[in-house]
Image (cartoon, rainbow, N blue to C red; front, side, top):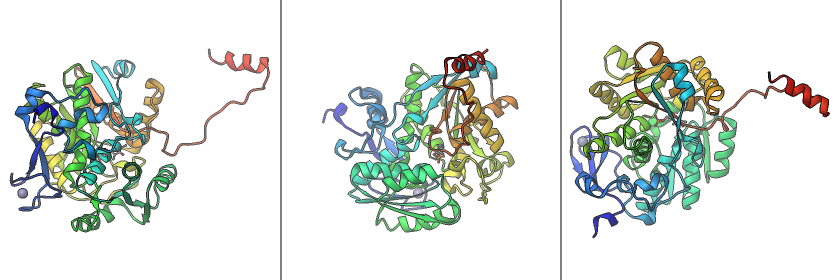
Amino acid sequence: MNSAARFSFLVGLRCIQCSAEHPVEYLLECPRCGGLLDPQYDIDALRKVGVRDPLHHGLWAYHRVLPIISEDAVVSLGEGGSPLLPAPESARRLGVRALYLKYEGTLPTGTVKDRTSATAVSAARQFGYRAISVVSTGNAAVSIATYARRAGLRSAIFCYERGDPLKMHHMSLMATNLFTYRGEYDHMIEHFDRVMDQKVVFDGGARRNPFKHEGKKTLAYEVVEQLGGRAPDLFVCQCSGCEIFTATYRGFREMKEMGRIPAIPRMVACQSAAANPIVRAFREGGPLKPMTTGPTVAKGLATGKPGKKGEWVLHILRQEGGLAIDVTDEEVLEAQRWLVEHEGLWSGPTGASAFAALRKGLSTGELDPESTIVCLVTETGLTSPYPPPKTHPVEATEEGIRNALSTLG
Ligand SMILES: *Cc1c(COP(=O)(O)O)cnc(C)c1O
Ligand SMILES: [Zn+2]
């Protein structure tokens, strides 16, 4: 076969723990040691053919480095291809050389999760599954349920009962089977993993499935392309289930292996101060310890037991000289307001948290302002709770309008 016609250049799955190589099949962990699996691609062939296919748009332009073997399995709602917005006003105020915001609010369900739902649901189809399941605090539930609808699969969605009302409304429309549970994400997830091991339904969770997290890798490819073929110096992202962090790291690493970029950017992982196991371990220099999460406005970051993926993140941070920063609710809400006031971007708290971490890292001097920085803004604000609007009543007359305009200054 002409190699440019190959849809995916996936060659196998390698265990990150024992390095065992496994053929392409639906595995959630290494059959030998239980380690996480890292999809491997034919880098030499990719070096020749290139990664991007101009005949496809958005995320699927990168199908050669995604784990879907046949185009027939692809499920899409037009995800990916989000804007990389220059933010000169914020850059000026923060005193940094160049700042870009990768804004994921434009994706089909309004969050970064659509990248992984696209590859997860496509992979579910690829392996012949008729149902997919996920435990989620909101965004992943909405997104997996939506892509499952699109594919004609059933979805078993487990959402905790105090989810954001708009997100719960959205998921109740999209899910074929929606279940709510009491307690936190962490209470549910280990039980869920054990049930997923039986492979009755496809695992749409963030913890292990190597076919799922690949979708978020396209963030790295898009950013490099949008910067004209260059990697940023700093890449700031949220890190909760750790898919974004590990997937984008792998994307940058692949590009380095292909000789497309000289170095992997310095990776900055943002966590909520109420759910910061990676930040703590990084600061203390010790092992990752599971923790009980506190309440946080950044609901998408409420993971206290990131498991093996958390250990992988810690390893990458230490090996590559990255940085882990935690942010308080107050800092998150301030970042959310900042993005509205100075950039015209309305993000939910979880989505704005990486920007809060960026501000903090710059203010403590841990991040170099003489950098080209890419910071993720991972969701729209339209599905998050917000206070009642502030308004000023006017009289419905010419005079009323004139008086109103006179307040513009
Ligand atoms: C899930 C989520 C994150 C965290 O991503 P992980 O890959 O789980 O670390 C960040 N932002 C938003 C909006 C999310 O929904
Ligand atoms: Zn192994």
